[in-house]
Image (cartoon, rainbow, N blue to C red; front, side):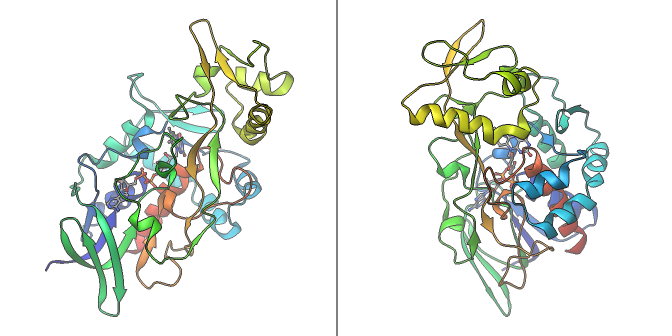
Length: 331
Ligand SMILES: Cc1cc2nc3c(=O)[nH]c(=O)nc-3n(C[C@H](O)[C@H](O)[C@H](O)COP(=O)(O)OP(=O)(O)OC[C@H]3O[C@@H](n4cnc5c(N)ncnc54)[C@H](O)[C@@H]3O)c2cc1C
């Protein structure tokens, strides 16, 4: 049986960035995904919006409960994101709370543009679902749909649990085995990041540019937002107030009201939706999962905050890139 130095499970932004880093250093590794296409994941659905540079980065993260020692590490390595986008020769522009990767095609999101570029020279094993693994003194053994694999270091970059909720636009995995069954201590799994403007029963969302030219209204066609929130929504600058906006909508639903978005073309019903998850595997500053010697976790599957919305928009991609790169230097 082949023994790999490092196996990375998952080819989203976290796993692919780590593989990209190891590839540059001629590291010995294998990266695999359960999907037929390595671009099929939540990262490719994302808008490629990174929360850097942002003068309130640290304070904002601490406000939503992201741990102090972790956020210090991300904050002090923020420039890695810009360097990475430049190294990948990607175009990006500044938006309200950070940088967003440009897409020339309006049907292709920034996340897909970004991930395609990262994966350009990577060999990724596809259609290989990992069911379980165990760590012993001799190393780590993985049990997958393609057989048994051995490695010295295992990196879980398996994404969040968003896909396990019916009202979500995250990619749905055929198995949540690694999240649900493996006996790794997980924290804050009940902490979910809701997007206020879910549509299609929560399976998609309206983003800033979609909503700036319309109005959120109730069943009687009366605007539900006024003053500050209304202006922020019109200016595509409401992201720091997600939770308060969400509270307004949830409050209306709790009274049996319905909420719609209306513009010159259509009127559609809004359903706040799970956008991504804040809980997951508990790691130390090196991204090592607590209680294990050589098992690591990066990306959305690693635990973040647990207060209110638990995570700032744009933080998921920023921390995935930085933690993957820092781990790449080590492995
Ligand atoms: C619509 C949408 C827009 C978003 N926009 C932004 C944004 O602009 N900015 C931002 O910061 N965040 C955004 N997010 C959140 C962000 O996209 C995710 O948090 C991030 O992409 C997760 O990356 P990841 O690498 O951790 O996981 P994923 O991209 O989910 O990748 C997980 C990988 O693991 C594989 N996998 C899982 N289980 C197994 C298994 N058992 N065996 C083998 N392979 C497995 C999957 O196939 C996949 O390849 C958005 C989310 C959504 C849903």
